[in-house]
Image 1 (cartoon, rainbow over the protein chains, first blue to last red):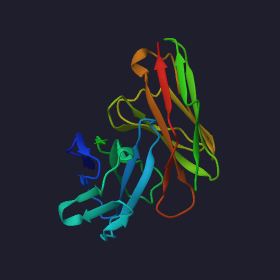
Image 2 (image 1 turned 60 degrees about the horizontal axis):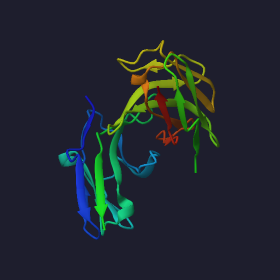
Image 3 (image 1 turned 180 degrees about the horizontal axis):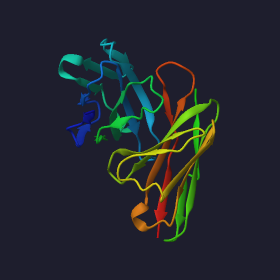
Length: 117
Length: 117
């Protein structure tokens, strides 16, 4: 069965600290997509990244970076030099069989990140 | 980029009334739309998958007679919460999947916050 686990419920850091949000997934499919979303207090989901199962290259986008390791079924997200504006709930999600029309996203429980000044 | 709108963004209603939430894909056609529900401090849970021109598929535990879904066109899906009760108070989020081929990218609406008094 498919599952996404975000073991960290809440993380608190001070501005400029680096922080890594963990995500472990389970799936029997060989083709799948992994996502990270940010949900600020307004509630609207902000798309951060999508990675397919065949692309294990790490990615960096500004202060954000992602480490995808199929061997450990993990897709971790690191924020470098955190800022107060990074405070939000972050969700990791999995989409199996993406070429099927009825495939929804399976979300982890989310990690609440609080960055203090 | 692809935009999904939801209307209303928030609604307060009395117990026993029905509430309709609209989800529109503004600049693309969506064969499939998904409805998620998010209770406070919890993750997004898929309620149902809506395919244009056919009956919605509901997840286990979601009452199809209570949460009526209509996907009458390629750009509009509606969720009607019938005889709403306080326990239906939640954040309802829709997503729309682009109909064209490929990995089936999904785009999320901004959400509708329902409060039932």
